[in-house]
Length: 64
Image (cartoon, rainbow, N blue to C red; front, side):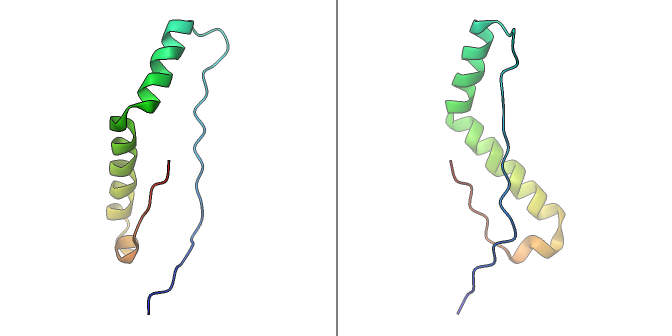
């Protein structure tokens, strides 16, 4: 029977700095809502997993 192994939870916080043009901030927010952003996050996590052979046995879930 498989057992869950929770290694850790990683949190990434993306913030818009003070003074950024509101139009640029809106573009950044729209990019975060784009499904392509989540796909890029999934690819990045997969690349890290592939780069560390010991992690190959793990299943990765990206929650949004």
